[in-house]
Length: 69
Image (cartoon, one colour):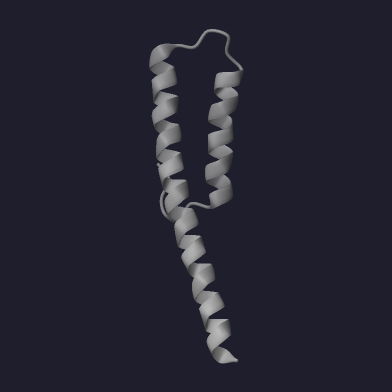
């Protein structure tokens, strides 16, 4: 399970693997597909949180740069 410390690139890589899993199949096992969809949803949720955190950090750096001048 991803954490808020997981790198954005690692999360994207895991999502890409899920997409590749679906692309590689002609017939998809419904139960396995559901597991993959749930895993993908969790990755997207974590990715959104990580991107928000990174954006906030950039904003803090920008704010610090603007107040030092």
